[in-house]
Length: 357
Image 1 (cartoon, helix red, strand yellow):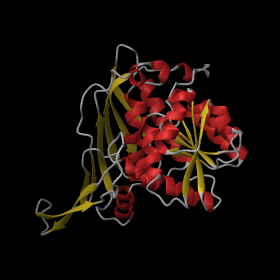
Image 2: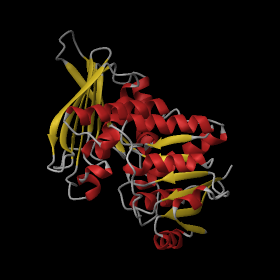
Image 3: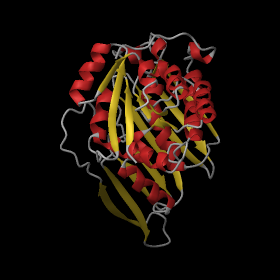
């Protein structure tokens, strides 16, 4: 089955997604239309990527009968109205993470998708990358025993970007970077946490700048997640189990390798252990140029997973379920509130202006 894609907005992430789609067989995936608020931007994007149809405005894309599914790469604050626009016109939807500003908006989107009986998924590409597929296999197989401690960090000084700096766009580190930390952590543990809490500081604009979130899980397990848009952090994950540990090196959100260490107990002395190390590599085969972000060729795995789900008649993907998205956004919402960062959307939905992309 060929999946015919429509692309909503023409920003950097949409560019990378379309380039990744071009790495897949043409008989399986085709981008047939693109829309932006500016018709000139849409036409420029269409010309660059050889897309047949370009629209100035999103409703025309929603009404295009040649489109099976819409990829939404817009800014967070308009995800809710855009998702409902396309779902309302009977389009399947893949919407970039974070899915929405808070749990209430996620619930509204998910409920509407179910009402329309359409496929819908939050675009968490990290979970589909080969390294993360292998990570799940190792953890389920007990490769490092019972996971007891996870630490992760994501920090890049990007506060100068208005999308990050301003509350009206859903700015701050938690929604932009923390979403990766929480999604990966929940993937690792694959169970509902017992509790979570966050400490940190706000920027002068009122968005979160630097935070530390602690999540407690059953079986006396803990995760500690550091997030910042004010400073560089290690940007890696370490997963400690009773029989070993796994390190996901910097750029954990798009990993190309993992370092797996297992313990061999040599005597009754708990300190007398031998460590067996293995480095697993997962190169991305791509000779394409023009990507804006590292390892964006990996979007192809997410896109193909979506096609497989739709072929099977599924309305959500088990790798990133609706339940996953709801829990992640509940944790992110509580984290914001813990540090005193409230959005208007936390109270009532405000009228928003679509970004010109």
